[in-house]
Amino acid sequence: MQVLNWFFRNKDENVRSRAKDRMRLMLIHDRLELPPDRLASLEEELIAVVSRYFEIDRQTTRFDLQQYERRAALIANFPLLRSKS
Amino acid sequence: MSGRVIVVTSGKGGVGKTTASANIGTALAASGASVALVDMDIGLRNLDILMGLENRVVYNLVDVVEEKCKLRQALVKDKRLPNLCLLPAAQTRDKTAVNAEQMQKLCTELKGLFDFVLVDSPAGIEGGFQNSIAGAEEAVVITTPEMSAVRDADRVIGLLEARKEEIGQYRLVINRIRPQMVKTNDMMSVEDVLEILSVKLLGVVPEDDEIIISTNKGEPVAGTENPRAGLAYRNIARRLRGEEVPFIDLNSFNVTWFDKIVKIFTPVRA
Image (tube, rainbow over all chains, first blue to last red; front, top):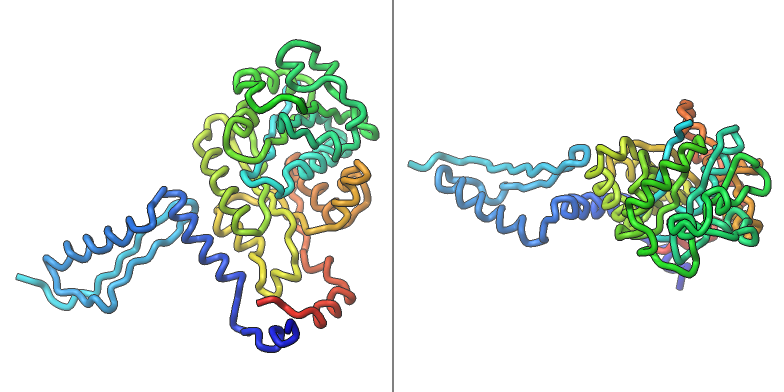
């Protein structure tokens, strides 16, 4: 069975980078003491606010938590289609 | 004389704090400095075993704090290095037997007698840890490249950072790295861990079976010719003394032709 596993092992699976990604996200939440659902509700509110001024492309709107040294930054990207009057 | 008080801590248990304390202390003493090793794991005394001194313990840290004996009476001299001493933890008491103020006083007294005072902190971030950092001016944070250990190390770094005034600097030791597993992308690398924690590196210690053997003998590997973990700890001691020592190339050992063949025939768990 183990031999079979060895042959069918997914070569693309990179446990190391998966651990690193999980780690990074986890520590950002830890350091900010951020509950898991908190960010989602902020994102919703941000979209609502921006939408009052612009029509935005919801498909390509992106939120990203990034780490700078031991600080975190929230990067939001709202592709604007046209302004609302 | 005013020595440096350095706390060795990790958050998570079992990552090698006590082993690191014993080895860094031994390496510092072997290079000529006078060193006191302080076991702060009250109730779970272990540093004496790693040093092979368990039969020589008479008094302990709590006895000193409670003034049942003089500091000098409680210090146990190392078997090999005359300038290395151990202040053992009490085995029959618990973490509440001392407080932060008493620890500060004790550390002040010790740094008057030694070049280096290494405080081996217990696991966790509660009372025992708080007492361990109370008298410290520097910290060595130990982690392994595992997610749980890195997370706990991050928590500890956060707590150390909050005490910037007292603890001037903290550096990281990454323990039990397995170069072969990093190569096959099955384990986080030194660079990965450093990037995640954003902290200065003090040393990298490879996984080494000799550590278990040396614990059983009561002779830290740093005091031997050991070219893997022993060398890594000797380099850490040199860096603590301010020397610039390049980090060892992890690919140069641990991977023998035998390991390679074993690897080829070992199915990898996905």
